[in-house]
Length: 69
Image (cartoon, rainbow, N blue to C red; front, side, top):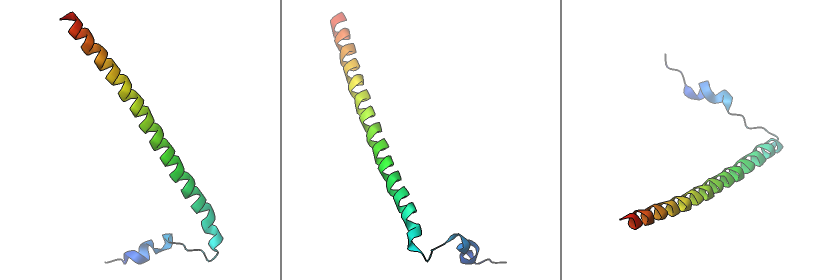
């Protein structure tokens, strides 16, 4: 019993005649893309700050080791 997958999943595809129905979806997609970029750059900045703090701590520890030798 072979079922045609296009017929099975074809009900999920809906292309409205009134193209105004696309506007809310497009606005939401643009908003979510902007939100994704903002979160990406915020995480990148946070990571950069942590990296700088880690390097400072590493340098301080190495200076302490050199001082104690």
